[in-house]
Image (cartoon, rainbow, N blue to C red; front, side, top):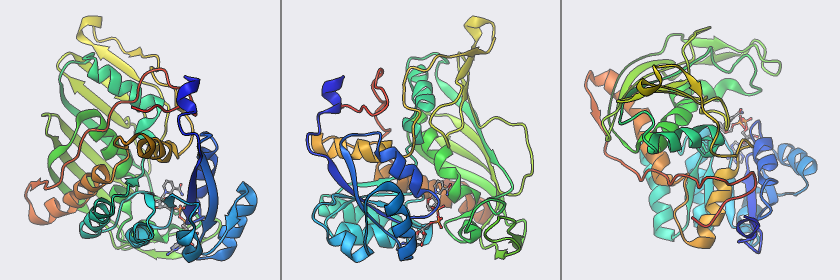
Length: 375
Ligand SMILES: NC(=O)c1ccc[n+]([C@@H]2O[C@H](COP(=O)([O-])OP(=O)(O)OC[C@H]3O[C@@H](n4cnc5c(N)ncnc54)[C@H](O)[C@@H]3O)[C@@H](O)[C@H]2O)c1
């Protein structure tokens, strides 16, 4: 396996744009891979970039300077959703591959522009989440592909909480277009489900904006009144091309519940899938052949680290001329699904999806943290 780790002889240079809450997960995650090197970071607020650069040991420069650097090949875009597309397009124009935090863009039109610009330039477009590459969901994928629960027929996906204004230092964007439970947390669930089942074909839903405003109680923004411009409770059904029907609730309006994150139901049994907003977690199955007793399944895959495995996979993919797993097409399909919930609720009809994507390749069994291979 050591040979795999050394396949990229020359580390690939990364530049991070957006040095807020999530950036430490990327700086930390990049250190897992000896072929990733964060060269520089930038932020609209120069002090934010300087603080991150001091903490993680890279240069703090302006966005323009970062995009002009020859030693940066991949731009990691950790800005807020409203500027994801703008920064991605600028990175592509500057000749850089780009990996964006979720969602790919706020509007479907902008998401398409980013994916098409990447294709036209022969550059990679990638997008979070990469949590589906972690040990938990990869184990589920293997068990599913091995047929343990038979043919998937249905499932549930529940993400319910009372929003992020109790802890986030800048929670306003969670209630603006590009925020809300579907655009914020939905990508984890939808991407995990696409990884498990392949592409979806249609969506129907009822959605509502329950409160006109939210009041922040986080330390940095205590008392701030935040306008709510997006739906915050979404109940829907997602039909996959493979035939599985998923019942989903995504909500920022629920104080407490006892549902599990994701469950899958197959012709031969059921599977509990761990929280897709994490890399590890408990996987359990109950099969008809085992008298429906729930059994915890040992993980077949190893990665339980931090965000950045998707970027590492993109670097490997560039080197070995293979598809990367957190692809722009996958993120665009997820983005269309996210928009379809409100569209269905407004029209009172199923929304037939226009986009599709390849199911990302399963990770090989046996890779350890810091290891990725050519396949
Ligand atoms: N915070 C989390 O726990 C978390 C977890 C997973 C994903 N995310 C995603 O990561 C992204 C960023 O979230 P965050 O929590 O870090 O937000 P944040 O507000 O803490 O940080 C965003 C940073 O981007 C900078 N920025 C905004 N516009 C910019 C521009 N045009 N050019 C350069 N810099 C710009 C801001 O100054 C800020 O420092 C979002 O898409 C969010 O959904 C956040």
